[in-house]
Length: 557
Image 1: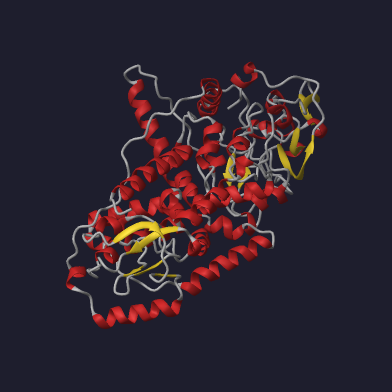
Image 2 (image 1 turned 90 degrees about the horizontal axis):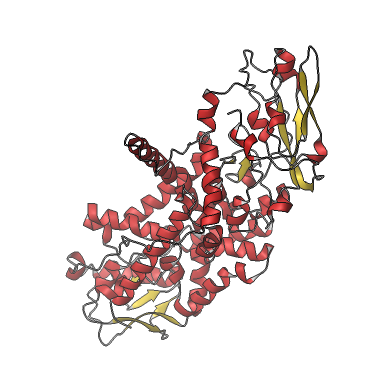
């Protein structure tokens, strides 16, 4: 096919895809049902592969679809389905608006040693049992961290600003959302890759995809045997060079009428730019496509340099430029699920305002005994720290989706292998007894499916009490906030002195939700805290019911 409609279709489809994926991370009002999230992320290659290894099923077979698509059409995944790849196209489009030279490319030799070395290291480290390289280099996870740690805070601040303006006119359609801070160290990795991918895209188009990204390199190997691909008709080609100028992958050697299929991302820009209709997309023919070997492309580069750039390259005809669509159809909403999440968000958003007017005692002395947390607490569904660390790619979707903001990116909690993987931070929030959002949205299987009833009996950690920090002990004042807000009553109050009562813990029925730790008013160290279980256990069924609405409304913060 030679029609420029191919490129237009790619632009529209890619636009809808990146808007959908971005909205999954930026959905601050939780309007998208979890089942939709699963569908939107189904096609992401590495998350789907990890989920299939962990939980083989058709719902985790998206990577097989990508492989089949690559066999038929080459690396079209990189242009149509990879949000980081589409993000790079947006950056390069912006670069072209700023300076048109940034949208003019030329054939370049591939960095073969670099890209295959990174792919080999990623595979070897993964086979050794670590997802460190996958966490660092997975394109979907890189994009997810960009959305969560850079764009989402801006969206929240914009929402809060607009909400404050509307309330002045007695309009309460929007509500203020509390934005809890994240340690500066957690921004290092997302900031680095935002800068790296952004700079490469701004100056060199798809250089990151064809040099660093292991998914792109692997799919490039598969594309060597692809059935369909970009092809050049020698009888029509005038070697004007317009296709090479338009190729953001820098993989078209127009002097030799050859295309490096391992780097071609099937963007169709070359078809749109060719005035001679010499380039088309169809069944591949041998003899005019190369596999990206260093020797062949080095020869081509030397010949191009010897021949000099033709006049047509210096002043190319304006090629079609990729862009991002402006609209997306409004998605339907699961009202029941939306209402639950909506109410949870209101609850978490009001914690700070409630703190200012609470009647709970305010400590006058700083606590002195540090919490002895031997193990971090990983989310429910993680089975245990080892399983969770083996499958989580730190995409941060659960961090973004958590309605109580208890999940935070780790920097040292799990060690180097678990960098950026989410950990429960009960100083910032608590795990809602009635919530399974993180489990429902996890795309890799790091958080295994758990029904709500099973989650309520999964012990992710055990409660520990430090009497020396408790204000009942240190200031001889009444408190009991921890017991009031424990959903399983693993914390209860027993007689102390002078009609005072003090907490006592029952570890067997504790599920490690952290409501007690979050409620505890002592600073900087809590009088009660949760120590993580290296392997999640079954908690004993509590005698009391679940945390009722009245208790939630009277949360001491």
